[in-house]
Length: 179
Image 1: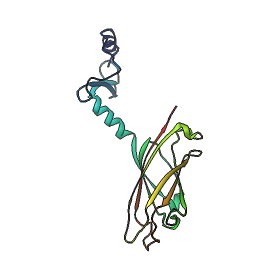
Image 2: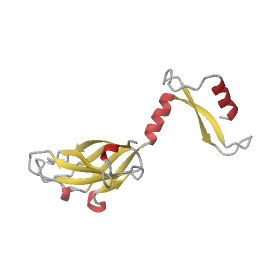
Image 3: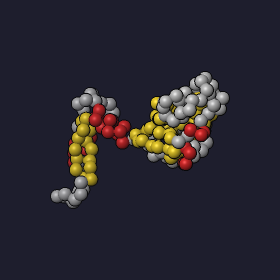
Image 4: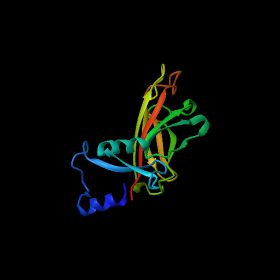
């Protein structure tokens, strides 16, 4: 959008801090499309507030995979939310009935760790067991010094089955710096 359009919006009092309707209100955005007629490489287009919000949310979510047996307990992420799949942790599984924990760290280099009061974290596990797998993951955020430190417990009172930990463990996370 060129400067004359912005001047018009300002002088007409059309710049607002709240929306009328997220389904119909349009937001002007610009995309770099390469040089065009006036030597300007940006072209203006519009999308609804609802679509813009969804597009930003999708762009800020990613899928990560951690091979616990090879890569160790830490993973670097670049988005504020996403899904981490943990594989190959069968030899490291915690004992049943909360008798031990598996250490796990999510690290986002855009977050300054050290003060847990300034970090918002949400962790949600999903586990699909395999065969006679009795593992029931229970996740607790346990600190924020070198990254978002987490402990994974086995909540199952059942002894380990032959396929213990052979299922699929996914952890949905949200991790934000609060200033």
